[in-house]
Length: 193
Image (cartoon, rainbow, N blue to C red; front, side, top):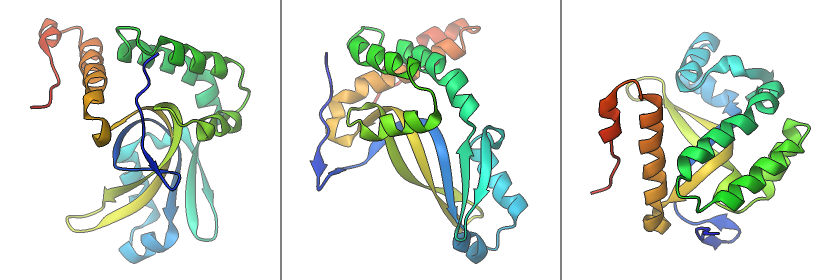
């Protein structure tokens, strides 16, 4: 099995990485919303431009607004979604053992909390947890910083430049699969030059 190496310093990944996956939690600091003078309706519109908020339940704490993905969405769909994504990413079978292990583990989980605990323990580039700071433009010169907690399906980054081949192939296959009604999509490529 081929597994890319990730470099750590003081327990954290060094460098910046491409993270593709399912955002299971969104956290927004209420103070940032007040400072930007964003209404609740505007906040929902900005977030809906990023992802489908119908998939999330909203919770409020003293200083934060938190959106958590509905558990039934993950439990009903994650296994089959991952199986399809893994099949697109791993056309040559280099990661078959790793992907099969993930799918087997998912078939034994009973809750979103178990899945989150599982991904938080993992340190491989597939099916791991990660928190990502993300900014949403709210005007020409203003941005809202939010924190996304993710179930990362694939992670690749600048430290392992050779590893982009699989990621770029994934993009190509995804475009081709999604656009197979147009035969020209068979000529689509994604390259770094």
